[in-house]
Image 1: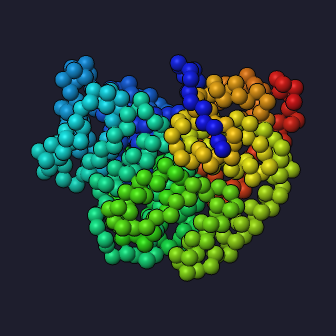
Image 2: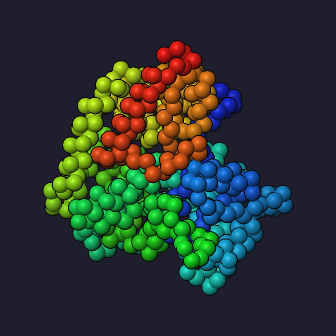
Image 3: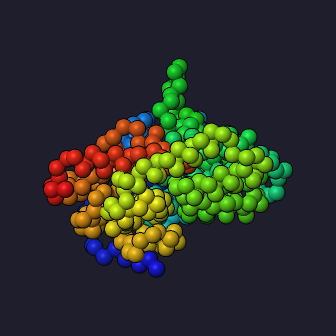
Amino acid sequence: MVRILSQTKWATINPLKSSQPLGGALAFLGVDGAIPLFHGSQGCTSFALVLLVRHFKEAIPLQTTAMDDVAIVLGGAGHLEQAILNLKIRAKPKLIGICTTALVETRGEDLAGDLASIKLERAEELTGTDVVLANTPDFDGAMEEGWAKAVTAMIKAITRIGEQERQSRTIAILPGWNLTIADIEQLRDIVESFGLKPIILPDLSGSLDGIVPDDRWVPTTYGGISVEEIRELGTAAQCIAIGEHMRGPAEEMKTLTGVPYVLFQSLTGLNAVDRFVSLLSSISGRPAPAKVRRRRAQLQDALLDGHFHSAGKKIAIAAEPDQLYQLATFFICLGAEIVAAVTTKGASKILHKVPVEIIQVGDLGDLESLATHADLLVTHSHGQHASARLGTPLMRVGFPVFDQLGSQHKLTILYHGTRDLIFEVSNIFQSHSLAPTHRGT
């Protein structure tokens, strides 16, 4: 039985989590021709924009309603309306994704009502642009919730409702926020190798993969799932959700369209990927292609090789719940021991399946205090300070990773990604065993 310890500190010293609005904005960035819009002050948007730019090393089309002192007192409906109209005129987006911040959520504004009035009064001016609202207060939850809420909001606002003619070879995929661009590309490749057509919501692999148009400046996202594809999600024969936090969007899609879903809590590790491949084989009526079977054999060999370096090692992980589960189960399969597990919230059901005795809800300060005897720290780039003080190597995962290039092109799922993770971990242990540390190990 996993014990989940609540946060008891009065202040966060070295934050682990990123905010809900940031997670929501990231989801909207996976739609072609989209612009995320923060409804709040300029400061909220600027902080999120800095993190996104540093992580992806790309231009990010994130905008703000720029609420001022007067709007805070009298209400922000006017600022919201003006921001939407300005974006429509200047950028001509296909989607404006509104993420609320603590400023307007604390004030208790009727945001849904305000947006409905704007859409009604400005219907002609907004023709050709969908406007979607995701309630993402940054005083609650974290990136995981913001991503899931934005995906749910897009399905509710855009997807055509009701039973529709099913396309037997079309698969809707709802990836979790913790999947990298390379992961999503790999997902698409393996689904297509079975003769199936994947529709991925959101699809960051098309919008934040480093590709920009050669002949013009695009003020919106460039690539990703189209609004038209979101509208036709109900024609899919099957929905696959990845990560417990994507259960809500999958349920919403099933309720609205009747499309059944299968939830995979992780696609990292031999057993999880085997189940995924078996599902694709069942849907398509085809056996696994030769290249998929070959990658499975490569993973088996990597598992044998990696055990020599990872077995018995002590691992300390700090991540949001679904990523914590993904990483903890991966390390356990390598014969390692999880000596510290820190996460952002204690309400997620997936935490009870993490293979540890105790999970601490907290920050990177908690990770540092719990990881004094760990052989490896696993978290995002802000863990570098704890790594330096403890003399323990750091494996960078999640968001943000700003002190290394290529984090979004690193595979972490399916046979190929699991194999690459094994190699990364083993190489860290090999290199660290030859170098002196503060602890003399």
